[in-house]
Amino acid sequence: MKKLWGGAFRESSDELVDRFGQSIETDLNFWQEDVIGSVAHARMMAAQGLITQDEARTLVGGLEKIHEEGPDSLRMDVEDIHTAVEVRLRELVGDVAGKLHTARSRNDQVATDTRLFLHNELLRMTDQIKGLQGLVLELARKHRMDLMPGFTHQQRAQPITLGFYLMAHFWALQRHGWRAERLLELANYSPLGSAALAGTSFPIDRLATSAELGFTAPIPNALDATSDRSYILDALHICALVMIDLSRLSQELVLFSGREFGFVKLADSITTGSSIMPQKRNPDMAELVRGRTGRAVGNWVALATTMKGLMLGYNRDTQEDKPPLFDSLALVRDSLEISRLMLERADWQVQRMSDAVRGDLSTATDLADFLAASGIPFREAHEAVGKLVRACAEEGISLEDLDSHSLERLAPQIPKEALGVLKPEDSVRRRESLGGPGPKAMEAQIARATELYEKSGFPKIA
Ligand code: ARG
Image 1 (tube, rainbow, N blue to C red):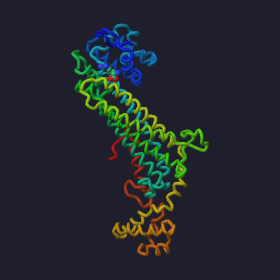
Image 2 (image 1 turned 180 degrees about the vertical axis):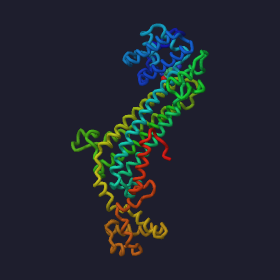
Image 3 (image 1 turned 30 degrees about the vertical axis):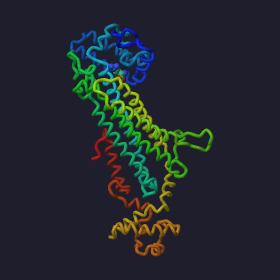
Image 4 (image 1 turned 90 degrees about the horizontal axis):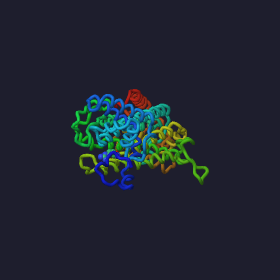
């Protein structure tokens, strides 16, 4: 196997050692970043007089050619992407290729590649989050008056609207966007020029390569720059959090699309059938998002475990940072898109949802609130309504079935004006507190969300 080292070695390495150490397959994810980083390094070296302008032109020309050719021109029987690019460069421009590695090590190179790659991925992730938010916002607007049961403990709690429910997911996405944006800022510092761990005696210009590559500034300490992987853990954490929230949405879609709920029909194009039961339509995509969340969480745990106790300075252990990173980013990318497709094509059964909030005693809180508002301490009101609920259950009627006669008979202490709060529509309409599902509160919430959504990026809520 072609290597960038070996001068001091008498024997060639074992075949298994080559295979065990190889990272070229995973490295292909950032082959472009590797080439771009090398271009910046070559230009800086020429500007500093470390190589001639002619040599720089040759090196940059060769690197641009590799960029045009794409990864197919790269050899795969090599240790890593840095080797593959250098080998190809030598084929294209000859021995001057050997000058590219002056004042640089694969240790600062790989950290640079990863940071550049992550930057682009985070930008893509934030775009995708915005896209999904736009859809959720549109659906929430459309369904802001459509009743649905709200749950606590996975049991009917109080009536809400479908729009209100969807907006809860909008704000979760807003937080993810915000986190990703903060990481874009936090991770955008350049390790390039740190060399192996301790800088270099060559008069390099780290400010120049940092600026050329779009970083905010060079990382101030070369040892830190080559050792740190916390920005990858941050990224894995964000990926895990996105997946956790998507898994909750998925679980809701699985439940809601089942016959017991019947709240939503998922489109044929994103569901699958059963090989034995012809009538089945399975929410497999939602289940896979839910299931793969385990992997996203595991990826964070895997790298955190690798990093724990690692002495500063490059350790080959950190080669294991990239498979989980690439995996989690791809997982989030696909899961955001699958979630978008599921929601975009969902057929919400609004009548069924609205029917579901009737007859379930879920306006009991409204009745207690009504009594409390008339001056009765809330605890007493709670007790009185509790008794009424029990009486209703014994009679086999629901709260909405009460009329002035039955109310008088079952709960003489409750005034008949209370009947006006027992319909689910009224219950929702009356909950106008900030963040509530009432029509005015929802209008305000949607307006606020729209305002934030239309700004670029993910500004603070307040
Ligand atoms: N494949 C290596 C990694 O991902 C590249 C850096 C190798 N550096 C070294 N000193 N062996 O970490």
